[in-house]
Length: 70
Image 1 (cartoon, rainbow, N blue to C red):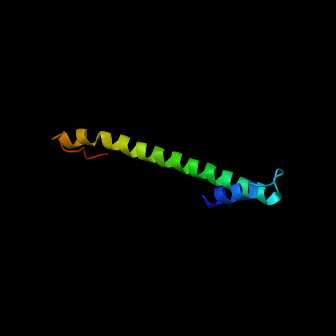
Image 2 (image 1 turned 90 degrees about the horizontal axis):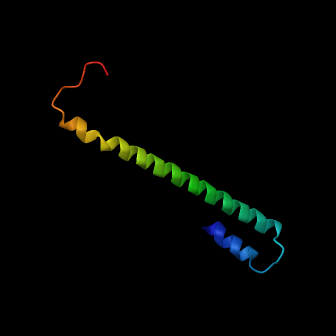
Image 3 (image 1 turned 60 degrees about the vertical axis):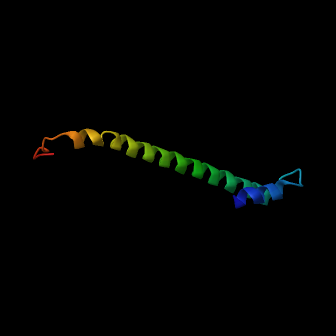
């Protein structure tokens, strides 16, 4: 968020972007891509956990003991 604020401040007055403003913009874009990737991984992880837990009631309702070999 700080990088996004800094990039808007640096890009606000000049028409031609400076080297510093381009670097700050690239850093902000990189962090945004990284955050989006982490969010996708987290959502996939949560979906995987919920998918595994959906069937847990089936195993708890069964009265048969588990087999010796798993």
